[in-house]
Amino acid sequence: MISVIVPCYNEEASIPIFYQAMEAVRLEMGEVFEYIFVNDGSKDQTLAVLREVSSKDPAVKYLSFSRNFGKEAALYAGLKESTGEFVTVMDVDLQDPPRMLIEMKTMLDADAELDCVGTRRVNRDGEPPIRSFFAKLFYALMNKISQVEVVDGARDFRLMRRQMVDAILEVSEYNRFSKGIFAWVGFETKYLPYQNVERVAGETSWSFWSLLSYSIEGIINFSEAPLNIASFVGFFTFLLSLFLMVVVVVKTLVFGDPTIGWPSTICIILFLGGLQLMTIGILGKYLAKVFMETKKRPIYLIKEKNK
Ligand code: UDP
Ligand code: MG
Image (cartoon, rainbow, N blue to C red):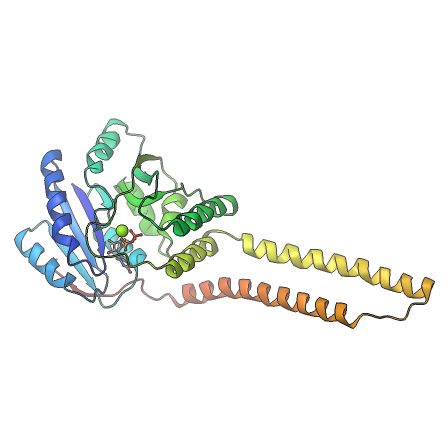
């Protein structure tokens, strides 16, 4: 059986289209599917649509959160509920082409060593160029400074074996950056390239700023580089100040110069003040993560489910 996990946030229009497309693929594959739709606190008729779809097909499960907890939480909830030997996670807007599942399953069947087949967008047509630019920058940076390798353009859309899903579920941290977690657990993963597809209905819930803060989350969660840079810059500034101290003392003794330079003093004060605030800010980012982790709050809360 294949568990299909689908996070939904304000997707009333996409769900029926997605379900139809998936049913066609299921018949073609001749597999048993278990759908797990996760309603992530939608403000539209998503829940009503899910009730309707699930009433007609016993293979459709749904969970409904008490509020919007974010896609990462929805994925985690779905993985937890899944029972299939294979598990796939898909967006409901058909940006993850359902027909790719056929090839993904064939690849897993053919190679027992393979644990996961992921997907990778090779272009970003239809996306604002500025967003693509920052996305590229993010992947380059992330791969340089973090312990995990995140393939450029990799989607969350993937077909995994049970073993890998159980490993992901063991990573029960509150701050979830799924792309990083998928990479962190390891296992043998191959990526299928495909051309970007535009959303079938509804609209994206990610603004430029939410994506920016998401990428900062990713870096903070999987890298200590910002802390190292802060310490390094601090140490370097300290060395520089030692050197300057010697210069000032020697200059005064040898040339008898009175110390002049109010403007330069102000510049140095501002420079160091700014550096310190920035460093404290970086520390604060990590501390905030520790704060949220130690609270051990649940990752999501379910208000309603059908099974
Ligand atoms: N999604 C979610 N919770 C959120 C935001 C998005 O469950 O808070 C779901 C959404 O319904 C969709 C998937 O995550 O199935 C991807 O979202 P979207 O298509 O808006 O992102 P994009 O493809 O534009 O990156
Ligand atoms: Mg989308």
